[in-house]
Image 1 (cartoon, rainbow, N blue to C red):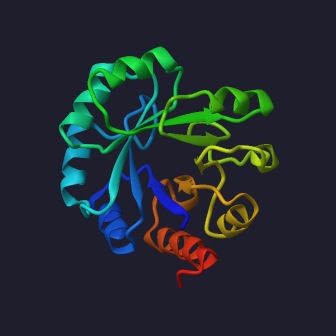
Image 2 (tube, helix red, strand yellow; image 1 turned 135 degrees about the vertical axis):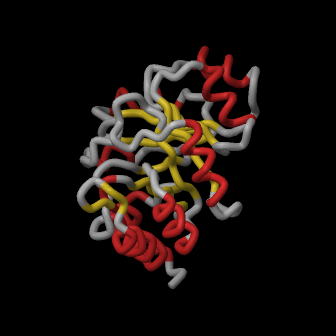
Length: 203
């Protein structure tokens, strides 16, 4: 079954919608400059409202290792998603503080990006056109990828089924594709989840 990640949740009503839909993951963005950024305190409050069967992913861009490990150890997030210039040395240092899973997000511009991705020691890869850009890249580049990965970038309720049919990714990640006016739209969230599950044959 295709895993579902609804990213960039910021409000109590976003959590309520997610609890009703039961995706596999939700994402809290801690990246400076993001309009979806939440504080550590906000994330903790949102996590308290989150159904315990849904994993919370913290999205970081070149954050201090102590910040990432603290949120993981306190249970504010269950996984860390790294979107910046974090290298294998960064990951090794993070492993000294936590054994929680790490998602390595990579911008896909060509085949060379994928060759580098295959060498990552992160538990899971995420392929995107850019950090939260909401645009798609050439999906054909992923046809030879052997490792499990999350597909992100430009996904929405209308195109996610096609993406799953073509690539059969481990999971799909959406943010701007389930928004209206810059905020999460519960109807679009429901439509996205329904489209994934219909393609998987679960409904």
